[in-house]
Length: 472
Image (cartoon, rainbow, N blue to C red; front, side, top):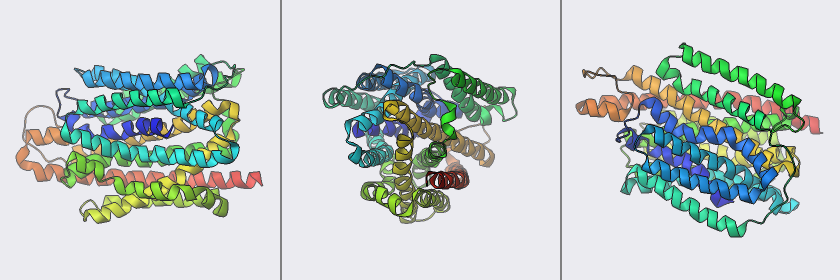
């Protein structure tokens, strides 16, 4: 389950390293196209992961898991063969559907296949693997992109998915199914709500935040969210009952997972290009450059359950979000400093991930009964991936807008460049000015991520503190 999870999460991170090559490829993507290529996988993943958890509860977790890994492989192969952006997005969406089947059912398998006394440790190990997966995606993706084209990355994911499917076929036991409705109506409305929300965020800089398209998508998201709540409240067997979020433990843990991955994947999106353009790292060097972030995850995760028992959930989460915010802000100030300084702040961010992941995963799993393990896995996966998508979308749009404002006049005819690759192709002699505009914009984006993580983290900690007092 850790291997399947690392592959699914690593694919989210690895694609960020390919952004420079994709921007300069025959696909000729715009800045909005690049965001959609990165986010199509994550959006489908985030939107469908709760329904796909319900599919596992209803039709069988092992079958859902194997189908998901197969779809991940198929979508990666389609992306590798894509002649244009449209086919690429179709492959990314299919891979996202596969990931949505994989991740919640990995959690469900662990909940049912481990003894109660081992379950907390197993979930903590799984949470660490999901965090490390993002870094493995950076390193593995960097190695592949250093020796080949962006297509090689997708072929490698397809091959690894086949290996994981074969392993799971023999390793995963079959489990009891639960006769519940799949609530297709609620699932469809939920997906529409999330897609509309993220479409507005991604298209904002391209279309203008006051454009009818962007305002319309945000309004549609609010309307669909209201309809979804009404549908679920009236359903006899809702996919996800909104009343569950009246439980402060569940609501604060879900928000906390979203906030943690907002900051982390916002960093992943910026970091890959920042190391390549700002520091002159190769694509492999950029992948290896994120490794310091994994040190706390590798060596500290096993101590987190003990820290929670000793100091409590609110105190542990306070340190987690504070560390993440300080790390992101420190990275924004050290883009011109020696890499050793940059690496120290990566370790600080890693401490935040190490503390937040196991705590929040266990809280969500314990808030729902074991027979709803697929939904529990879906909920924690949905909040993770929604946070990841929002992180990439918000930080990516801040970066794009800042770059456009700071880019010097290049004196070329035609449309203004939206990426560093496009700007360098138009005016290679102005390399230093173009890179400086990008680095400054990336620093601003990291500061925005730091501020949002800190402020939202305060809300999460307050909710966790109230929930803890309520249980006493």
